[in-house]
Image 1 (cartoon, rainbow, N blue to C red):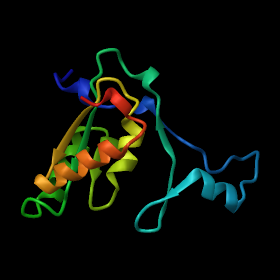
Image 2: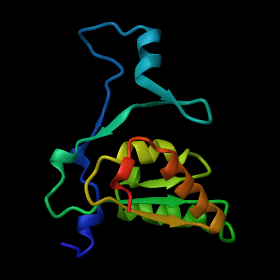
Image 3: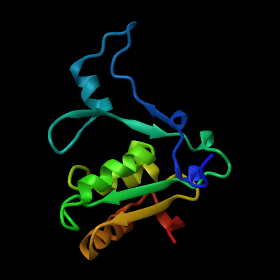
Image 4: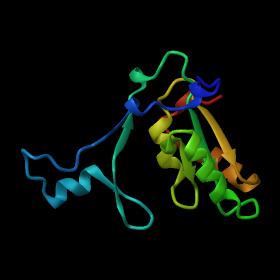
Length: 140
């Protein structure tokens, strides 16, 4: 086992809200409530992470990558990180608002945040952390 395995969010901790059940008929209104629209208009299911299923020694890492920064190498970095971590842990800031990922991960113990980009990217993430009411005083 890798010495960095503690940084990877185990897949069994992640659950998605079901959008269809074979026993019930889900209307469009219900689907809209349990789905969230991304920037490009596509629907993505609401995901949640159960901290009780994390191993005791887990130190999950949440990575923000600005794919438009750093000589346009962010796309390659995002791809490499998604191969080595749970893809949910790697957030491309060109596609996803950081507040969405921070809300999803804020309740995890020992969470570490890595920001890949320039000074403006770091300021953006720090501002999003300040605005997040769910985090409260846990941020150090």
